Amino acid sequence: MKLRYSKTSPYVRKVLMVMIEKGLQGRIELVPTDAWSPETDLPNQNPLGKVPTLVLEDGTALYDSPVICEYLDSLGGGSTLFPPAGPARWSALKLQALADGLCDAAISRRLELARPEGERSQKWADRQRAAMERAVAAMEAELPALSGPVTIGSLAVLATLGYLDFRWSSEDWRARAPGVARWFAEASSRESFLATEPPK
Image (cartoon, rainbow, N blue to C red; front, top):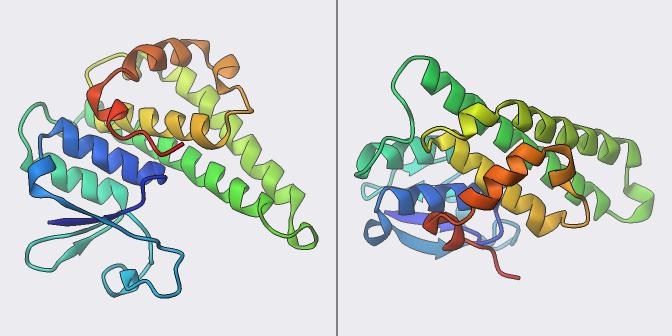
């Protein structure tokens, strides 16, 4: 299998964390990919032109990160990261959706603020910031689920909060979610998190 990836993508980091948690490192070739390059062949495998994209041995391509993560969970050993049908599964999937949505808002805001000043919409950027703040506050309310067994939800939250520290370190998410901050301080010592730190 081949994983088309970028080291700075929080969605990729989540996939890499699942790969490590499931002991699949030796089965997946990592292929650095610049999805923004006009010369990239990535759309041949993923029409959306995004990473992560997982190319299976038969040439089938899987995307996006929730699909790839569930596929990897079905292959590897160890504890199941996607619980079976029932309340625990919905809780894990809800956390993953919350974390991915926070990433969506953080990335959208960053791209908007990178536009030339005359093309920039401060209103749109402010809307994304508000979504980010609400998502962090919602994570605080989900602390009991975060504090339970490791799931795709808790791994997604780890990857997302790592992205906030990476790209939005000037904004203190920890002040909005002190319980999550305490959880993060402990959970961020996981091997899968430490091994996937983006470049400085």
